[in-house]
Length: 485
Image 1 (cartoon, rainbow, N blue to C red):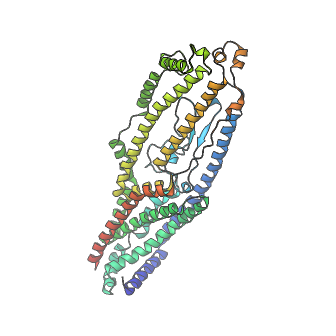
Image 2 (cartoon, helix red, strand yellow; image 1 turned 180 degrees about the vertical axis):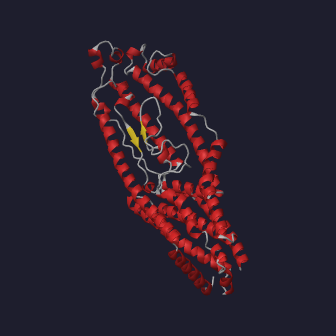
Image 3 (cartoon, rainbow, N blue to C red; image 1 turned 60 degrees about the vertical axis):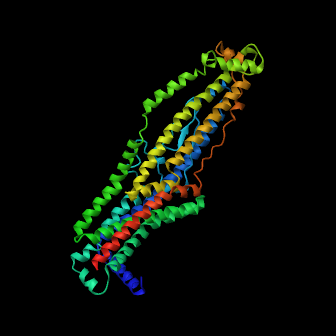
């Protein structure tokens, strides 16, 4: 573009701003957009900061509550639901801007023996799909409301010139259609800059909290590309339609289709393409498999007959009474290991189904920029399904190690005969307890999100989807712009 054309572009952009400054609607919409974005950033940051302190305090209280337990039978500590122990996931710094699926899945897990619990304490546990209109987080505002605000400001950019009969005058003065569209686009992009500014500043602040500059840059650039898509859509519609009403109607329809309908279609299509078994059906299947393993609380269960024989041969004794370790503890440990294998198999099946569903829904980013930016945002921030699944896997390993640690105490610190006679009388019950010093087995759990490089690599398809949208729309605008000339 020549210097002369560039100066014309700037003049057109300035003229558009003068029009907006005279328009109460444009200024009101712009003020609402800036206020919503800024206030959501502040409120969400304060909320996440308070939740972070609450999680830290609850984690400390849960651990202290466990280690403060008095002398008990070790297997009672395996069933420590009455005493409480939780594993908490510390969110990534950028989650203050996009909580992602954490608002639906939760970020805390209650750990206990013989079972795997799902995450809890979700802000919107009643939500069944990620496409529901959520709380006014910065991500929600920029993804859903910002395009609507841009439409209200810019829907008449070109069509207004037609209606007011000034388009022919501008073209006659040597201002080409492309120059006019680019100038209007520059003005709209400056509005995009104002909307994204609070988001960008907040994202940069997370660098001091340990977030990667690569991640922050990817986050801001992703949202800039997304809003650029909407700027191009607005320019294209305003150039195609000769009346403001037609342009506004078309853009309103596109907003409803792309921001409301298509994300829901993506979610529904994913569930249809990759069906998953219901909770009741899965629970029955899990119980059926666990039933085959035998009862770990019953040392006489036939399922442990071979295990018993192998122990007798290993220690070269004739009866379990002669074993140098507690047979009940060994059975509990063996049972827990087998149960965990079964539970992990079903858990992996469920997680693989969820991941496939998510991948199917992400394909809709090629037909909806809203789906693309939603995927990109959660992946880059570290609040996507991949991060949640890794949290589940790591907490399950923590749970298993913890329970087996208590089983080891059961095996080594409690005599078998004392264990078997524990319910004979009060004295026998007291004798079947071990020292509270053995409760110092909790491992420190610090969950961190995936590295910046991994998150950046996962976000590449979403970036490509947005870039394709931009390329197609730029091509459409060039074609329409030549026709204007």
